[in-house]
Image (cartoon, rainbow, N blue to C red; front, side):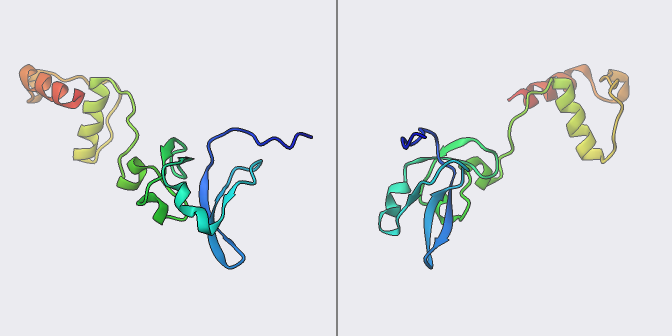
Length: 127
């Protein structure tokens, strides 16, 4: 068995060791930890986010958390999913009305929304 350490991005978290919280890696095959007197070295290191699983750089704000999250997750910014304009419009409409719609809805000017308004909404949602 090799004693050489594996190169990977750590998934840092705070663990209680001998009555003191220290930074350690949560990955099953990793025994890495940062002694208390060296914890300032975790700042600027890459880590895996506990919420979304993406890699991010540790900073003083997310180091306040026991299971640090990236800035997007900390700020509540949802992951962007790719949607067509009609899907995005449909989701917005469902959210506003609180009603579910069938998948075959199309925007018609006779429905009270002009073609020009539909185009402007679609452009707004693309931003």
